[in-house]
Image (cartoon, rainbow, N blue to C red):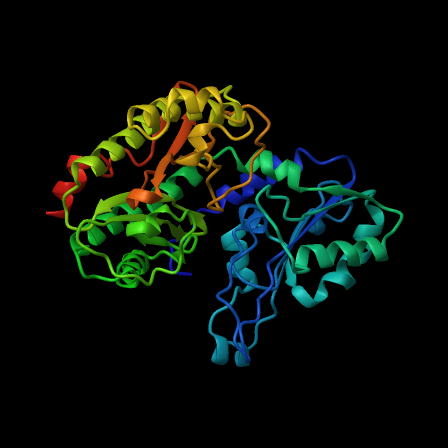
Amino acid sequence: MKYDQIPNTLFIENRKKFSAQLKPNSIAIFHSNDEHPWNGDATHHFKQNSDLFWLSGADQEEVMLVIFPDSPVAEYREALFIKRTSEAMIIWNGHKLTPEKATEVSGIKNIFWYDEFHVKMHAAINYASHIYLNLNENDRASIQTPYKDLRLAHELKQKYPLHYFERAAPILQRLRSIKSELELAVMKVAVEISNKMLHRVSKFVKPGVWEYEIEAEVIHEYIRNRANGHSFHPIVASGRNSCILHYVDNNQQCKDGDLLLLDSGADYANYASDMTRTLPVNGKFTQRQKQVYNAVLRVMNEAKKMLKPGTMLMEYHAQVGLIMEKELVDLGLISMNDIKNQNPSWPAYKKYFMHGTSHFLGIDVHDVGMRYEAMKAGMTFSCEPGIYIAEEAIGIRLENEILITENGCIDLMAHIPIEADDIEQLMQ
């Protein structure tokens, strides 16, 4: 790993919170992500299962975590199964977790080899009444492949058909959405890496550079600051591309007079940053570009005020839409007649602002959380309104990370330039 090791007190406390939510005599089993094949004998870069990492800090393949608070065998109340190491493995693949290092990282004393799981845990599972298993229940997920957690669930349900099987995901969604001070400290490192990236890129952008060259500057700054890489594939969109919400080709040349919409995040210690800035390629906004830019910024500033305990996410999205509606009328993009005759299920403002304003943030850039429950202190959200005028080749989105507190919200990116004048000054 490139990043500084996270104190294991975070993972010890996370397991305590999770264990407290289990039914009596329950065993919970978590598995690391697969190593996904690329082509030939190559695999994609490994990314750990977010729930397993949140509970253990173990950041490698072939890991299983067992939590069984009521186990009559003390060593199975918390147990971590790790990939068996050998001298040959070290020669070919380098360092993997040793039992001593696994304890240091996770705070779990009982460490076993991954290939011992079924032998050691069979009696323990038989003793338990409930088996908690974990699936990817992120609202945004659309998974076509039979990933490891799903395969494990089928395997255990076939082997232990008379047990009561329970879902770990709803518990973890609620727990993970509230960030501890240790988690916030890690997230602030990722935020600062985004800040450094913006300062680097703003000095590089000019007419004639290519979007992929800008992408290279982004990843350069991330890696040199010990990030694992991107938290999602970066959007580097100039000109009309800025109006394509998920544009990732990043293969066009930036031209004089274009806007550049840069939506990117760093993955630091498995926690994601997520920031969007829109830059004038030549360093100076046109009057119209600045007019639209300031409208987006006003919506963002008003939206942030609503991110507070008690707010319902879906109602919040609708309220932000009404704020955007007024700005679009003032910009001459929609009329009061358009609003009067709009389809209630697709309001007139959606022509130019067609996405939501906020999503949960944390280990995942689109983190888990209960979107139909009220916001709580400790939650972190993006705030990212945008206006996309394809006929004018103007696409502007602005995005910061917001922490909800008992007294309102804190913009974790408030120190990063965002005012139009500050962006222009930064580019000089």
